[in-house]
Image 1 (cartoon, helix red, strand yellow):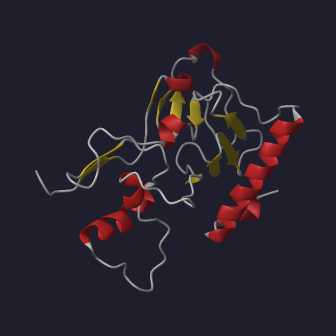
Image 2 (image 1 turned 180 degrees about the vertical axis):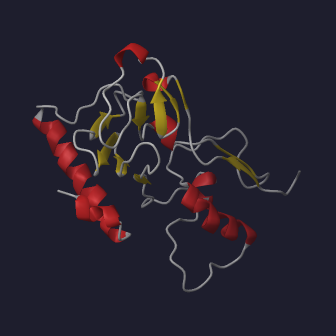
Length: 206
């Protein structure tokens, strides 16, 4: 109890009526039964593939007496990919040589010492291949989130999370020039992330 690092986390979030749907990223309409969208070639009626924060974000509770302050809260981005290098660092084990590593050692962040160059952007991939078929990709940056479905036209989404944390107002077609400038910036960031990992979906990009 005095010297053990304990991490509690999960693999995906869950919608319990949020945004009208139930389940995770391959959610189903729950609260809009009388207004179900028509089925498409790739998405059956009643389904709502999504990358809402309720699906993407997960709980993370960490306890380590003497290293992490009790009751502290981290408001920086830590990804599931970060746990591997973080736990190795906590154990004093060097990273294996010759491996591709996408995660980062998050110990400084957990200890309240986030480096100045810590990247808080979030890139996400979610392709659904059973029932609904999508190629959704997401970038979350600077209080904004862009989601693109490269397999289904008309499903792109843009949310200003600072003002709309519940993701209720899709601004993808907003006529406001400043909003469209944010969209273009996020699209460039998204494609750069996809290319960096050789995402095969890049071939479907405009």
